[in-house]
Image (cartoon, rainbow, N blue to C red; front, side, top):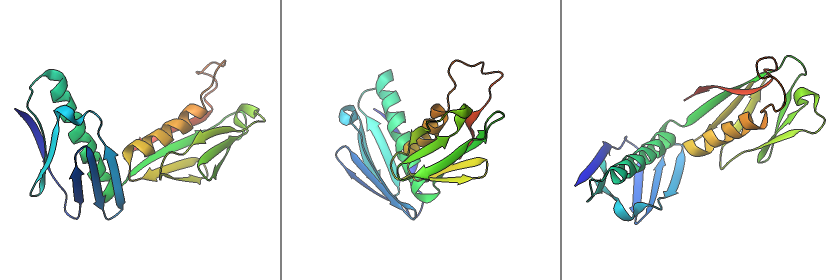
Length: 174
């Protein structure tokens, strides 16, 4: 039998029902459904979370590690939260960034008339400060996907990347 466990931080509550895990804390709550849970068992033992499997095969061990990492990220998110910072860089045309509902508009990128659009995923908050974009939230996957969407929407095609460095780039994660 193979298992991994970790100690739950204080002021974090967790509910486990079949293949759904719901973690709540001071910043909010995150819920996740694990599809590949057939071979993996999640249980709470006092203040510890134990993820175990009967099999000791390599892929099942990897699955146990993945599930425990997701639950740790959920616990960290509801206590501390996650913040990604992106820097707006331009040398040719001044880039304007606006947040509208569930999307981000990047205007005047390389002098283009049509704005580029990046989608905001989930309950992620996006703030624009002069030459920085701050993406924050409690779900790590949503925050990182939103930052990646912004970075990918400014991808340059057809120009030399060494000369045209314009775009939005992830500077720090935390």
